[in-house]
Image (tube, rainbow, N blue to C red; front, side, top):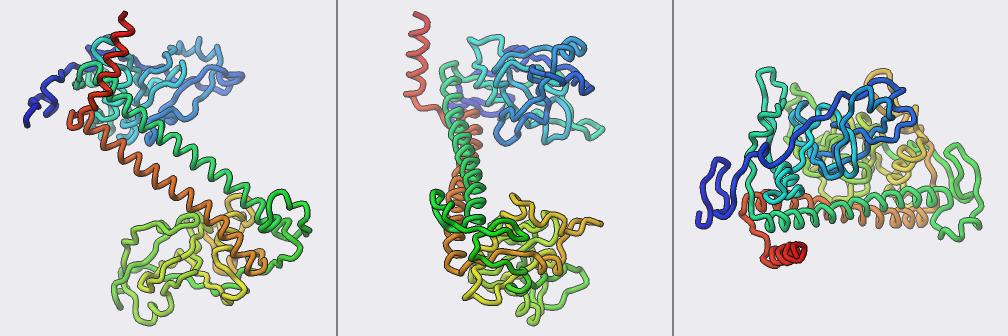
Length: 439
């Protein structure tokens, strides 16, 4: 390939070099984790474990706090903010974790700590992204992935000119910052949704500043507007359990069906890939219609979504209940989808209804006995529409985050192999900055 050269790590641009990690950086490990509650009493010094490294965001999420006695007794070594850390032993999925310390911290012995010692050759943040892009894990005969210091030191690092390294790191930093901002928006929207549900299911579809005007009454499901009714779920919905998957059952037409993994909180998760045979009678009995509520019987008990599609060629397994409103003129299913979500996740209203003698599950009888609120139909629709708009915003931000994460992966790979070169203006910016700093 023109402009590239063949090396021991593959094709790289002709103006790039290769060095081993051990020659470019100082590599150390942490110490044994303090054992005993008294080492954490009145703790104020951050201690990082492997579990504190987030494999999706490549960041530190949380930490333990140890006291001075722990530092002394376990001879803990302090590492400065910006130190690159990653596991050197554990399951292979853990060995791909990477992070930079956001503050000075002590680290566990399973973690490696890396800081560049030749800043004129390599930038610390560029090295961080290089290590994210590197596959360090390997398996020994015990089938337990481990890394030793000699293996880590021998890792070959591609080195663009230092200005290009800084520019690459800046590009990747900007994408990660945008991902973090998007995560914060999602988190804020979810918190807003919680407070909104609390308001709507207590006071109804009225503005916040008018809630004092709403006359409330105490019921078995908590405070609700006085004009709302409370009824049993089974009196409002026809409940149908799906078909059990069996190797012995081969009669009928092979059709796609929903598993519990296809049911999220308030959404259907695609693709729907599982298939099993259904007879014509079963197809007629178990077909889905627009507006059907789908409720998980097992797994995360009560997880509920609504079927919003017109296709009647999708069916469902026996670990899912289909609830179909008996009267469409009085009941709006999407309202009760949100109610069940609120009641289980926030109000913990139906805790204890699931059978926990073996595998947690929800019986048809118990689902039928759930007490649920019944506002006037127009108010049901208004509340569902309000919450649906918030959900749509959350889903849009989640799609944005997924797209940004894919962009980050693509850029990471292509920038670190020279398949994409950083725009000239970035390089000029860093060259001008370097010249200014050098006087």
